[in-house]
Amino acid sequence: MSAHRSDDTGFVPTMGAFHEGHISLMRAARREHRNVCVSLFVNPLQFGRNEDLSRYPRNEQRDFEMADEAGVDVMFVPTADEMYPQTPTTIHVHDLSERWEGESRPGHFDGVATVVAKLFNIVAPRTAYFGWKDLQQCLVIRRMVSDLNMRLDLEFLDTVREHDGLAMSSRNTYLSAEERSVAPMLHRTLTQVIERISTNLESVERSIDDGRNTLQSAGFNVEYLDLVSMSDMRQFRTEADAALIVAARLGTTRLIDNLRLFAPWQTPIS
Ligand code: PAF
Image (tube, rainbow, N blue to C red; front, side, top):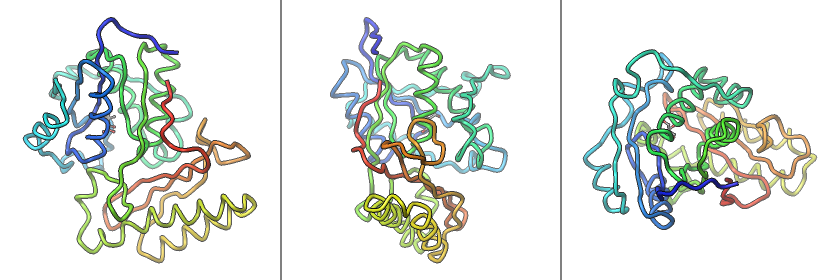
């Protein structure tokens, strides 16, 4: 169901340090709306105590130039004090928030849901754009929008990859030259596992175990590699709609990625 405002704004929430993934969202918003707004806010609420808030990559000047080139009309760049003048009321998306990334990063999705809800209320967009690279984030936001009857549409766009398959991420800049040369193994392994599973659904566990071993041998510290249902992110049973998800560390850098099992990615969900 789509609920349209009288104004016509496409909105891309970001934490800056733009790459082609962000730009593809901005371009889609530009194509589809009269006004395009991008927020740039490194949201402290979604970082754990031992995470990378203080060293998260920041390059505002370059971000403004890239956004300008992509045809963005308004950059919204609030401060933490403006967003959170007092201990904030928070949003918890039950269940979906608690698995996978939620287990590795407790409280992360409460921070994401809370800031995204605030940004939606401030910007009042007709459509908000997110990348499938952060698959669980997309599902958490979709559930929040549905559960809280928020009046906007969501569009989720395909992951943008480097020429060697590595999913674009602001955190890729943390990788040393050596780690960067190993990092594309993540996508390569996902592809191999998906190919094996697609031809033989009986081999799910074995294929995933082999994938995990391949990554461990290449130097990754694998947090999870699993096939999950796209509806609730529980372990795959028999649903047609599933995704292979991975989180793994290379040195101190934590990378996530995913591949869909059957359907093509770019199905807008509203
Ligand atoms: O994906 C991100 O960059 C962030 O999680 C988001 C959605 C902008 C919320 O801070």
